[in-house]
Length: 367
Image (tube, rainbow, N blue to C red):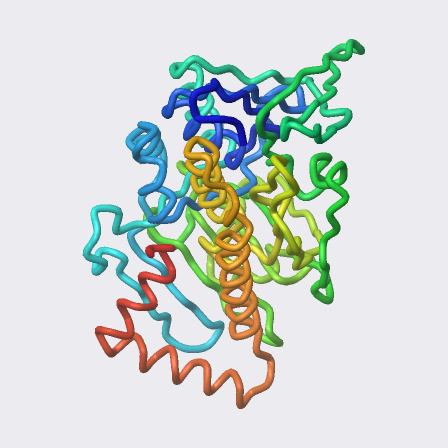
């Protein structure tokens, strides 16, 4: 990195939550980065929806958290249901924390709030701008070639952050490969409207079905809900009496577990989905891990302390992936004996306060 007396120039590629968090964290420290994104504007789809307790804590310093909380839905309960048997309810208010809830907010709304704050701090997002190449120079700087409207621009930076998602151009230019494991079968996500949804508006539901199928449903505001399931048809996993007034989409997708060996080469860094992807299991989802990556990296760049970035973030990423894999495996038990053991264990944990509070803490992503 450059001397602390020299003004740092930082390029961030990708203006999703990870890239915007990196931009906010640098800007509030006096380093306003160049933030580019190949898409034309913020995508209108909701994608990730849940912000963890830790994310809300980390985003406080930039002034974003109060705006997110004011806009999103505070989910105070989680209900775990089986097709046969009584449901189990978790009361998040038992957590002794000011953010004793899961914040549900469509990702595009999160990005709008973050981008507005970044602009207030003197930055802007250069949309419709793609990265062409990166070259590490002998003095530690990085030469980046970018393209907008057919015109190319070459600029030199002290650091480059690749927050450009699973198909990261930055990662490709670094020559870093994913170690990949693909889950068998398809997963799916759906969004739907239901005026007579039989559950509380401040509640997330876990539907544990037969043969190892499960779905998670989160409120998006009004009569709209988002479902994610470990089958190719999310709607088929949701049981109980209700009517679907409008199905916005119900799409299948592959789920891969991928994690890079290193998050850094010289002064080029990876964060968020560019470095890791895995099954979307609650607040262990990639957006929250990406926010943690971004906050750590921005601080380290500002303080010239990037040497141990890979070690720290790879450890957190590996632990989060393990938690996600375990949650998926346990929820998807199809063997009758394994299901009985799971149900007995969960039932016991819910009756013991210390165990219940540990489950709540894990469910909210509190650390």
